[in-house]
Image 1 (cartoon, one colour):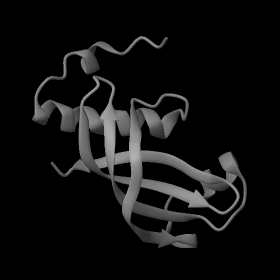
Image 2 (cartoon, helix red, strand yellow; image 1 turned 90 degrees about the vertical axis):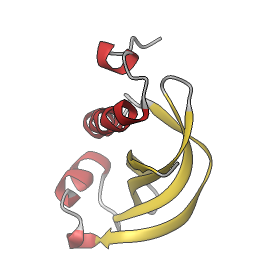
Image 3 (spheres, rainbow, N blue to C red; image 1 turned 90 degrees about the horizontal axis):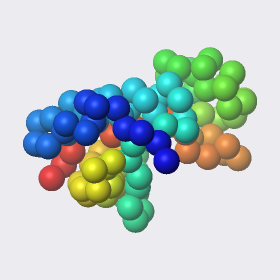
Length: 111
């Protein structure tokens, strides 16, 4: 079982959850095994934001996960946060054929 950092345990209000969500994305961004939220159900309204050289971290993605046709996508999903609450959120992630979804993060809450 993973011990949660103290700043996450102190989050109670909507405003604090938004601040914590940026920290959640940071943790997910730096180490893929530290995920403080999970997707509940399916991701809907999926749109491509960028492809190929339009992705700023393309060299990092290729180095860490391998070559592929990388795309940055966004969609809407219900997420369960570390404290057990569920929210409708806009999520962003990177994806390549044969590699799958990587570096998923919450960008904003929609509810």
